[in-house]
Image 1 (cartoon, each protein chain N blue to C red):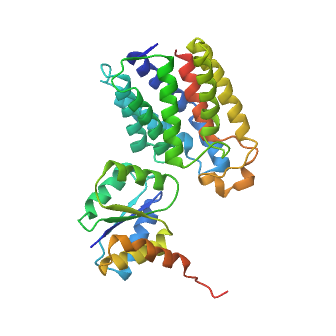
Image 2 (image 1 turned 90 degrees about the horizontal axis):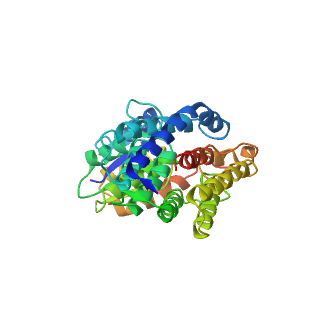
Image 3 (image 1 turned 180 degrees about the vertical axis):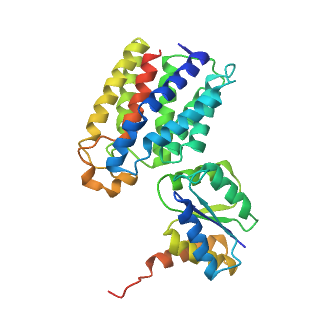
Length: 207
Length: 128
């Protein structure tokens, strides 16, 4: 079970992790994109932390919706509308909830991924955040449906996302700015998949 | 007259397209929404939203975007302004921006502008 105050802690911890990894994410993006992923994500999540002040009494849906809208307004790169839509879609699923269980998390993650696919017109195998998130979702869902403890299911989800990030090294980018680099992007891990992995790791560490 | 918004990751590029378009269509209702607040590279939801508001009329607004987040952020602005007459046009922002500004200033309706951008995209600059 995750309460709304825990969700605030999780969102703040995600922000801290993204800010900590800012330079590494930007370095990854320098290799295959326009070199702004870390800077953009750090700016966006920095703004999220500010927005969360004074939201202690809000439900989980509102917290995630505010997070999404803030990312859309402040990130400035493709990860803004993509993560923004993801958090807003997850927020819509968790509307008015002050606590969420494992099934809620599965439903929220499904909506978030659906939002990214819709906004980015993307699917797996294109060297994007979906290559981390989709296998993680599959593992989480399978674990929860098998009645596993949330922590156990999320551990498997993080492992699947790690494999997904490794997988992005083996494929060429066909979406986003990195698609201009084409086959020369092979060998580099995708920055978006990497930031998605960080978000899942923080979630695991805080449930 | 249809309003026109040029969305780019670069503030100077968006402003440059507006400058170029106004050479052909000085009375066009065209504005730039480039870069983030403060001018850093990126695309800003608020800047695009404000630009659309600025040139909006019942004739609607046409938006030309460069790439990636410029397209996605513009989509989100249009969703946030649901019910308004706003259309994204697919094409090169320099040639498209000039053609759309000119056509809009001559009274071409929003519905016909994509066709004009397609023509601009297909016009070859060299004979070979």
